[in-house]
Length: 191
Image (cartoon, rainbow, N blue to C red):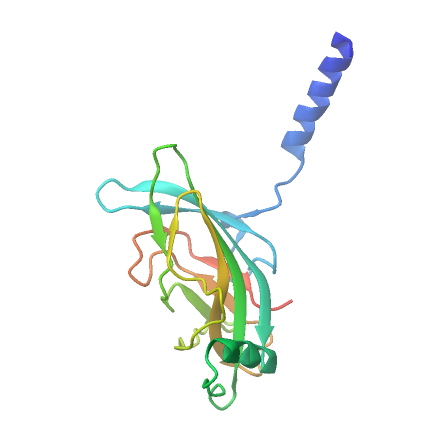
């Protein structure tokens, strides 16, 4: 390849790098009115630490949802004695991927997803929050600590009104006793 061809190749490559949109949605465009679609990752920042807090990048995506009888069947694999959801409600499961990335080599923070029903909240289309439920989600459950550089994928469980056609998942990094602070993020729990 001669030098002119090489320069042209580099110009085109650099031009394409800056023009091609990233596959992830930046959190600033994410809102209750514009929740991320299934499979669409949302990139945001959380602050971890109390004394010497650091910013970390998180990427979250709802990969799959299961609702109604199919969700109840899946929940029975984790707890055969589970009862049906209360009258007028049905179970909804979401398989979520959560990635935590430090911004510096020295970043060793941990974000604890725990089992907190407050971090992952199902809302109605008008953002009325549904009460959390205490059921054992199917394996793998999206719970526990995530270290910088790690990705965790698993299920979270909700009960939503049967008539609700557009439930929205809300992720609040500052709730449930978490040490992280950052943007509240919104995801569709429907297609």
